[in-house]
Image 1 (tube, rainbow, N blue to C red):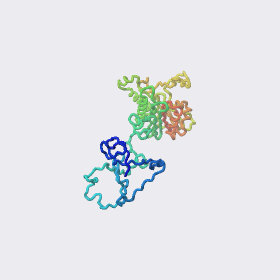
Image 2 (image 1 turned 90 degrees about the vertical axis):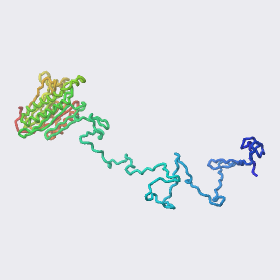
Image 3 (image 1 turned 180 degrees about the horizontal axis):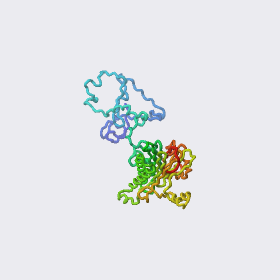
Image 4 (image 1 turned 135 degrees about the horizontal axis):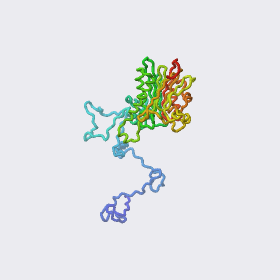
Length: 467
């Protein structure tokens, strides 16, 4: 007989009980049906094993071993974890247990019999849609990250159309009409910031310098044939007047007009000196034409004035050396052997030159004055009176003619300084010599635009003198 549980209240109606009651006096509940309370509750030891009451904590209890057979002498079935279905953290069913390698089905059935369309697996209630549709495996090209592509094996960017300007900074962006890179926004150097040109018998270089924001100089070099077939070499150099409006346009227009005039007159047999005189007048007309502008332009910019520039040019033809000028740009004669003197072939149209010519100052005093470089002659609509200067010479030895703006001769004003700056092989390497002379001005400070043309003069055995 099992021991009666000691209850203080009926488990059915909570009626208080007395010791020895077999039935509840209120509801008649059979108190003997209540299971006996275990003698002691197991305690968990620190190592995770259960300990019976009264047994010291820390001493593991022995768990009974599961029998190999049940009460009917049938082996106890083995259950695997994969036999129990479960869900993942998202609430979806876990995948079924993996299929063993090389499975052999009891009744082999082809995966897709002939004529049977592909369809999802059918269940008892008919076809069911899968929870997720498998994605196709990526192709090898798509699987590789673009960042790891070898630039040596990738195809280069398509070649931009002919004439497209690329940025000088990033080398990839295109330059918009305003002169800025569409990719990195870098301002591009102007085309006229540095210019070089070389022909067989003449070369010229022009540079913006180190202080000006743009190049207001311009040049034109060319070659023509005289009626007898002998060559004529032309070099024109112009310097825009910075205090005037659009000086860069004035110098460009003047150099082009003078060169075109000489190219038209020299082949017709016009004397080179007369051709130079006419070329200066053509240049003046081209600059004067720039002064014509709409009346509304002056309303918005009342401080505008007429564009203006200076000009110096030379023609070497048939043993004759011709120069022409207006303003303070200069031409120098430098012999190859340097045994003869270097000569300045032009006289400035400037305040300092007028003071020296009038005998009021010597050259050193005049050019030390702050008014020294104020020009008294120029090409432009507001010029007082145009007086083209021309002269012709017949040198008795080979040499070069250096035609330049004041951006150079300010750093080699004396003829001796110019002779030292011109390389000894200038007649054989005119472009290199022009580059050296521009570098001389930049090394000296580059305060102004610098333009130099070097014209070799071959020796012709004739008497020296002026025509």
